[in-house]
Length: 85
Image (tube, rainbow, N blue to C red; front, side, top):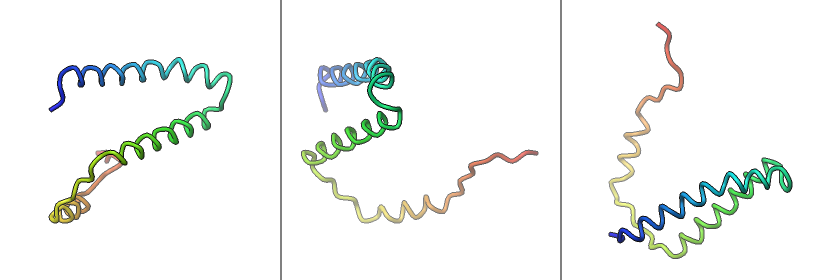
């Protein structure tokens, strides 16, 4: 289990990135890039970071009975609209 310092410093960095995003987006969208380009750039950077993180993380094996649980979830009804009485 990570120490309290590690957890709190990680949460602080997340809050810092989240808070800085507004200021960075405001400057970037008004001067440098259109909205689609800004979102695409964020997607590419996030994909690269997750890919790099995956290189250093150990791969977890999926247990054999997992597919039966997924098949059970696929048969559950999902309703995207509501019925009017």
